Image (cartoon, rainbow, N blue to C red):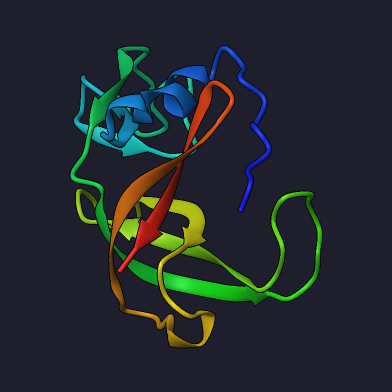
Length: 130
């Protein structure tokens, strides 16, 4: 699957570039220790602006998913799985992603997965594999 690079904005560029070393980084409030995704410039829990991108384990659980069977984007032939993965660092911390390395029919809610990255220009897109 050939990825189309997402737009790199001041709010999201650090997230998209952070996977270059194979480590998933998530926006993290250093004042109250709260992780946020998608990235926000201030903490939605305590409203601190002391937010940066910090490493997480990259391990999670498939919370929900759908199998896309239509060609929506160039370079992404169907079928493929779009999933909400809950990261193990914090309850309710979800990343919307693709599940790779497994037949789409074998993906299941509750499946344990780990991150890997697919490069698209300057971006490193996190995808998850069982």
